[in-house]
Amino acid sequence: MSAETLKRRLKEALPEEFILGDSTPAPLEKLQGQFRFHILLRGEAIMRLSRLVRQTLDKLPFPEDVTVTVDVDPYQLL
View 1 (tube, rainbow, N blue to C red):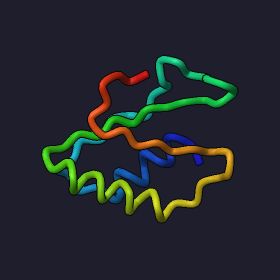
View 2 (tube, rainbow, N blue to C red):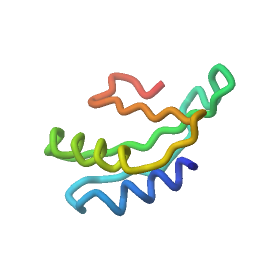
View 3 (cartoon, helix red, strand yellow):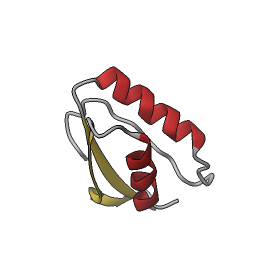
View 4 (cartoon, one colour):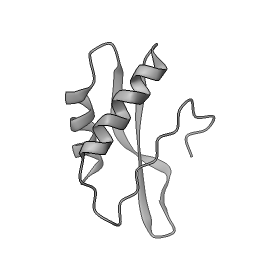
């Protein structure tokens, strides 16, 4: 599954009150042989957003070599 596919699925699942940014390569685009991307989500209702993201991710089939990490209120985007 590509970062664009993940972004599309999140866009389908999230209400319009949440802002969904583009999927972009991370500043350290490749780390330990893994390509990394960011998708920035914004919204006032952080608990609701977190729950909706988790529900969406739980429904998606990810390959074994794909890791998805959710960082709520990230300090840095590295």
